[in-house]
Amino acid sequence: MGIFFIFAAVNKHLKVLLGPILGTLVGFIFYETGNTPEVSKTAAVLILMAYWWMTETVNIYVTSLMPVVLFPILGIMGIDAVAPQYMKDVIFLYIGGFMLTFAIERWDLHKRFSLRILIKFGSSPEKLLFGFMLATFFISMWLNNTSTTLMMLPVALAVIKQLHGGDATKRSGLATAILLAISYASTIGGTATLVGTLPNMVMKKFYEENFATAAPLNFSNWFLFAFPLSVVFLIVCFLVFKYLLLPKSDHVLPDSNYCKEEYSKLGKMSFEEKAIAWIFSGAILLWFTLDDKDIWGLHITGWKTLLLNAHIIPDEKFVNESFVAILMGLSLFFFPSKNKKGEALINWDDVKKLPLGILFLFGGGFALAKGVEVSGLSQWIANNCVGLKSLNEWVMIFSLCVITTIFSEFASNTATVSLFMAILIPIIPELGIPPLLVMMPVTIAASYSFMLPVGTPPNTIVFGTEMVKVKTMLRVGLWLDIIGAIVITAFTMTLGKLIFGI
Image (cartoon, rainbow, N blue to C red; front, side, top):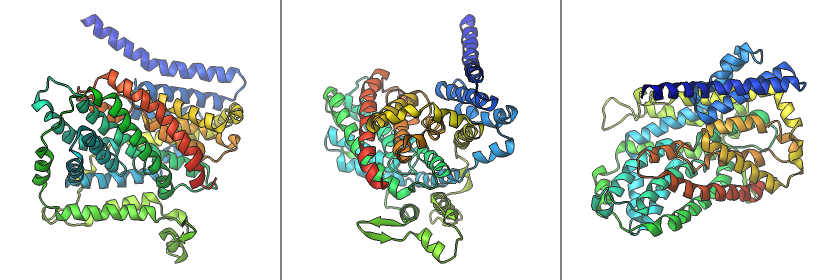
């Protein structure tokens, strides 16, 4: 037994060392083929981070901090240039969104909403499954998909417990489908809005910094494109579940009174729930009306333009989605609670639950991309990928979606987007097509990884219940990965072109 542990420890260290070895090898090849030392060293760092991100032999958040150490010591970028990459304004969009999430979770508003939908749809196995998917999908449009899955899991497990009279030795396709439904629907819902999942926010920042003169990307036009796409794919997901999992079910239903009893325990909607619902609705309204819009020939002036015209702000860059998120998040601290005297809707102890590692993951991607740019590696990538111009656009987008999805099955989807943006940004100007036609599908495809438990945090969470088999996830996920790439490509080349004025 001791020999086994020694071997496992050595094997783990070898996996860790393989990253620097591969990076050094690639850097050496770059240098020997005539590239500058800066390009060669940046290529080495890129390969190192890509390998560690993909294999997670080193914690992904630790990997994300590598540019802080490696770029200065290798002479690629100074620490004064690297450090600001870790505190972009998009970080505050993430922080503000989590403040709203914590408030909703604290006062059980999410539970009230999800139980109400399950009561409405619980009359048949198909309707019950769709009810879970719809509730999870809607919540995940606005809250982090990991939090959404954790919120829905207790409800799902309680409903599953009612199947077969609570006999845990029996398994039904419906039970498996419900668990996979909350995982997959939370991922799909996260792609429907700009604030739904972290990769969306990462891509937006990359786009704004590198294509400032191109068509704007904001909350509303993201929604107009991604929401219909995600609804269609949610329906596809439901049909795949229905034909692959439900036929093997005993078509049993849980006690119809369970959800009603749980809902009745919540009582009437509290003052705090109503206040949070209003604040949350206000955030959505401000996100939608931030920028000017032309709808069916009608011009609607955004409130940012009104502030600009009134000389309240000197430049349109002074406010954006991140400003709204922090504004509404902070308002929760100043809104008093009626049921807990002397307290607000949230307090600082709630905010301390904010996962700090995600901030490093954000920054690591931005720092890597900046290093690729300043070192000249971006130009090398662009010069060596001009052959992509000869591909049919449909084929190119579909291929990128498939490659991104496969990579994301083994790596964090946020890390995948950060890495792919760093690689694709120098190529996009050479392709002769609008940047969003490449960046949007790649970003959404990074979230559509359904085959493996490590593909997304929601996958890992439901797999941890030990009620879902890997082979089931592989069988269902393979179909969804393939169909997802097709759906994303079709929407990009049709609705995408229409919405982004292409």
